[in-house]
Amino acid sequence: MATQSSESATEPDACEARPAKDHRTGLTAYAARRRQNAVAGAACCLALIALFVAALGAGRAGVAPDDVVGILANRFLGVNGHFSDMATNIVLNVRLPRVTAALLIGAALAISGASYQGLFKNPMVSPDILGASAGASFGAALALLWNFDNRAVQIMAFAMGFVAVALTYFSARSIGRGANQILLLVLCGLIVGTLFQAFVSAIKYTADPDSKLPEITYWLMGSITKITWDDLKLFLIPFILGSIPLLALRWRLNALSFGDEEAQAMGVNTALMRGVCIACATLLTSAVVAVAGVVGWVGLIIPHVVRFLVGPDNRIVLPLSLVVGAAFMIAVDTACRTFMASEIPLGILTSIIGAPFFFAILLKTRKGVR
Image (tube, rainbow, N blue to C red; front, top):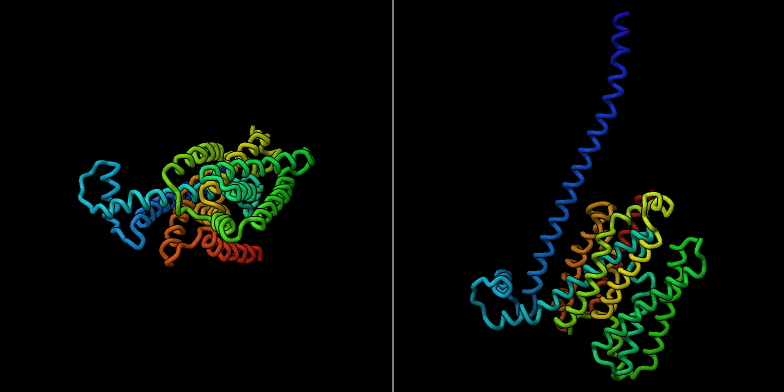
């Protein structure tokens, strides 16, 4: 009898110890995950810095990495050093604006794609899903056809990108307010994007085949060859205005992943959140197309890479997408200007890299389903 009573007395203690043990295990796993994410973030930041320095030195007139660091330290920190005038001019005046542009463009496209994938709860969407790239392409092609200067081309591209997304957004709202807004946005974006692509084709058909058509075609393939510091100063405005709200509201994207009703129960204004995300992503995408032309696949594949490294938490995915997207675009731009005697347009190389990568993602997903 004593033995039975002692055994029955220990049973509640065991039941209480089991949840405590599970709780400790969960905390340990959470701490390990945080350390893993911190290591991945630090590695990505170091890779970005290394690629930035390597890109400044890479080219037909090569500059050693230590000389690149010395030139930058001398220019921005006042550190004493003696370097040739040619190397200083190449690093500061020729390559630094271009590499900085690649960094900002890659970061903008990556965070736009990550925010859209979180907003639409679909990892297969990209920043041009609502027609921003198609509208911006139409604006730029029209400006080139009318012999506008470079600044006017950028303004037209930027404005028409917003016009295209506005048409998509208000078309979806007018069709059905109580229906599935996400599906309506995607469908209306497909319609608007196709329409503006038809307009671009019409402009190319009517353009002079000896002068205007090659100029329009090359611009649409994407390039940052002629980018200047003035262009970057203007680009910084939409970059800051678009990226900061997305980073500040990234936790709300996690709430939206549970559905509108659950997000509203958590205090999230879903309509306002959706509008802010669309506006910020459109601002970034239109600005990129305005200064660099159409650069595809970056906003689609980079968030997948980041999720593979740190998981699906948008609080981490969005800021790390900035870093990985910037590093990826620097690497692509460096390859574009060094692999061949004539420069490869950005859009071509990103498509060559992105398409097989996306196919590999589909294969991995298929295997996971099995």
